[in-house]
Amino acid sequence: MKRPAGPAARPGRPTPPRAPERPAQPVGGSGRGADDQSGRSGSGGRAEADAPTEPIELPKSARKAASTSTSTAEPTSTATATAGPTGTPGGLAARLTLPGRGAKPVADTPTGSGSGATTSEPDAPAAEHTPTTAAADTPLTARAARGRLRAARRARKQYERNEVRRFTSRSRHRRNLWLAAAGTVIALVAFVLVGVFSPLMALRTIEITGTSRIPAADVAQALDGQLGTPLPLLDLAEVKAQLSEFSLIRSYVTESRPPDTLVVRIVEREPVGAIVSAAGFDLVDAAGVVIQGGPDRPEGYPLIDTAGGASGTGFQAGVAVVGALPEGIRAQLDTVTAATKDDVALTLAGGARVVWGNAERSEYKALVLAALIVSHPVGSVTEYDVSSPDSAVVR
Picture 1 (tube, helix red, strand yellow):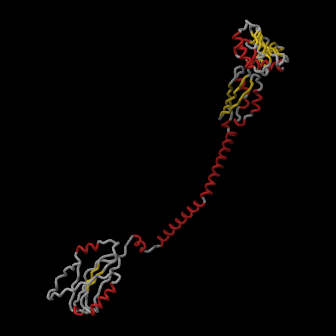
Picture 2: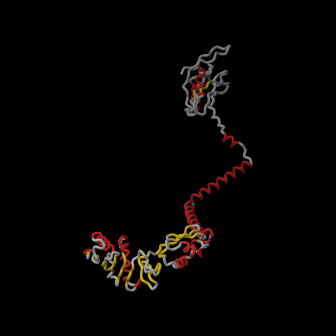
Picture 3: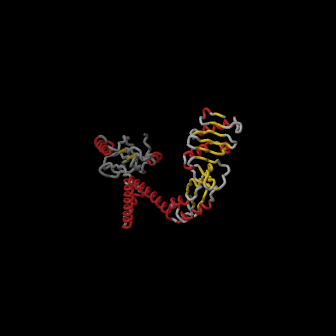
């Protein structure tokens, strides 16, 4: 590196010759280099003892670059040039310091009289003044200490709560499940109790459906004793006893419609024929229950003449045959006779007789009879024999 020119010589003195440049020493060996320089100046450099030296200055651009160097720069390198023996009056010592980590540019310093050349060490790095450092330097008052203590206690309690929640998560989950199940059961029990004992569920309306021969108002009036009773507490045995008084009811179904309605669906008995009675004629259903009676024969129904009346086996066989006949043939049926269950015979309105036999395969026999009537209308024959349907006979 070319050595910059020094300042002008002092007035009144001759300009001394320049001292030869010497290589810069590293930071780690700065003290050792100073000793070596002192030794060399004492032994081999006596001839230049009286020669004063002039300070070495860096250009302004080099100083500016050194002042803006980053903290990641290499350790400071120092070059020191000394001239003259110790004690030289007016002697000057110059030190060149390249900026680095923890070092600042050092201005040229004149050396005073003394026992040897003096060199300046790198400056210590300036302490960083941050808010934390400033707060730490602030003296802690009793109020601030109490505040910090309370904050520490709160943080400790929060930490303990979090740890407890973490270690008890499974037990809390099981507890929540049990609580949910218990709550569901309690809700169901409460609902049942409210439905059973609350007056909101008391019976106020009775609805009757499915009646044609029986007046619906009579059935509803028979069930008036259940009014005011909660729907779950209705006495169904009493309802059955009250409805059994109506002989035309074959079956019934009750339905509770919250909050206050009872629906009764009735299936009435269907008459299948008339039987001879002491009073004249009784209209009966398939079970032999008398639907109505009178001195005159009911129109539209066949007369069932069986041994033993409605309780005999011939009656049941004759009723089964009547139920298997198509509607068209049933409308032409006049009488049904059956001495036993195996000799059922029918008489049509035109006078033709049908030999039926027993009640087995009645549906198939009805189909065969319908085909025979189509091919041989009533009046053209006197008898249809379908007791053996696979080989029916027309006479």
